[in-house]
Image (cartoon, rainbow, N blue to C red; front, side):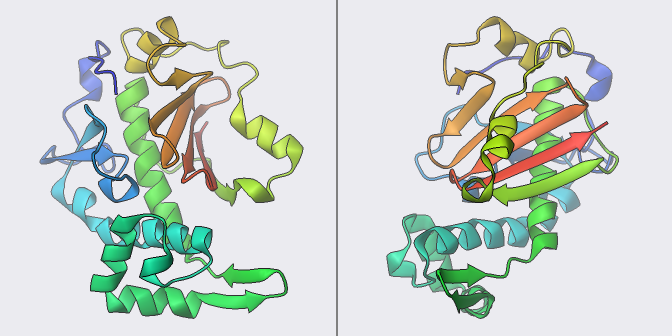
Length: 230
């Protein structure tokens, strides 16, 4: 990851990007449970209070494990593609049982009943970090829209709209923000047509302010997520 220094308004720094509380810890984005080792250098991070930073750890672990089980079509740790997730499930029998109960056999294969509230909380946490880090625009209030859907279940029109922002350059980010700097070096590093790949196959995201402040995230090239603040 290319290290960019933020030259934006200092008044948007120094507090928890999730609740506005004290800056007690650093919240890495994406959460390390969503990445494999070795981790990319210069991982993005935003200030957070200790409660917000630690409060969603179990939800982040749940989402990472759920994604891997869905992709593999199985909960058996030895059948999962990410070794890290296999290790987590071997050590956490209660989570393994929870995921087992969420799986049923459908006519076309396994069907999973996701705990959508937990998924939403993790996505919102990630989006808030990206908004603060990339755009220097912390979003402490609730978003106007938050949604997620497997890429494979999107229609062609939905997928096209999700992958691109037709008017992405109509509104430019704050002068000095990292997003503004990336516009000036588009096509270099891992920045490709608005998407920044943090770790290939595991995590990519893009930010935009064309139609409200928007953060889009793709997890494991499976789950497309979108959070919008009007």
